[in-house]
Length: 443
View 1 (tube, one colour):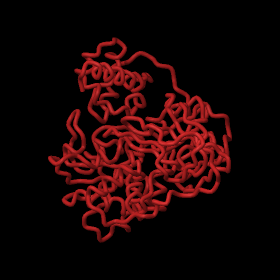
View 2: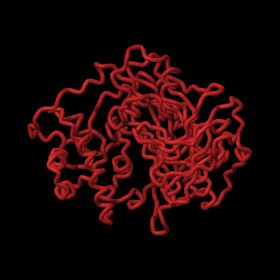
View 3: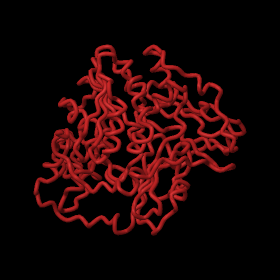
View 4: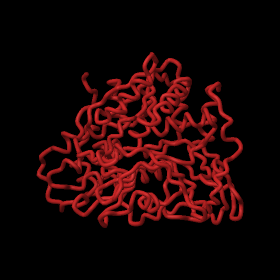
């Protein structure tokens, strides 16, 4: 069977053998452990706290909310007493107002949990998704209720589950498909109720044969759902590349997937949709991969949101060798940490602990104009020019070279023989240019 894929891209070592056989284990917080719930775990307006110090909260109780259209509420992941509401540093280095809860060890749930059901209207499904605080849990953090409401003019013909998990080392989605595939199918079927003319696709890279086998069995006989085997290539799981690989469609520059009739959601997001509809259960926990050559026991842990990265590393046997770098996420698009005492959030997919040998970044040398970054860029951009535009401070040239279309996948930096930090410089400049455009009233 021919494997589907997109144009260009790279083939980094995937490192998945460290944890792809590690079954999901639940990590339970200790009595008295402090759980930190950031009030901004999504793209959009941050939430305002609904509780104050001294209040007792229950698992699944809404503790933060915003009235903004693009936002997502947050919920308590343990039962216990609110100790403080204050700014706390997150994995990205920013200070985020957070609610700190002292776990009482009872894990008493909000009485509304369990009162779900599948026989809901489209509006009721969207409302339930919003109330559950579901966002893009693959890392983007975009509020899911917004994505599932593309507007009356959008004709959605494909609903795609992003099960590629192309980021090296990460295996949390893989294990969910092997162990909990029924929930994924159920979630996709509920999404298809919103778009009755659409067909569902589950796109899985070929390095997950057990996941492909299990999901194929689970969708057998379902005419509106198909499992698609994808070539192992990075960034296969990027939204635009996945759409192109599965449907052949190309999302236009500056456009959204809905513009070509597609909705794309990550494995964890689709499973959270299922839990919200069937069990009326909000997002209070997720599966996180803890891996890398510096950690003793690479693992996939199901943890309450708000536990510290340090606790997950400890639960994975701690370090077998002092890490030179700890990354939130994977090696291509993750964020290097300077402290592991930061909380797990809805978008935390992995914790990667690398030794000095694995984390070494060779020194930069001059660009030799080989064109490899252009040849391999999945968006068809010219990273060498974008980097030059950045270093020269030429915003007009950066925009003319379509710098805002960069998906920040890191393929250019990976493939560059001169080890130029192309993606890093482009990423920083994108944010600066976008901020200037917003200040001028642009888009």
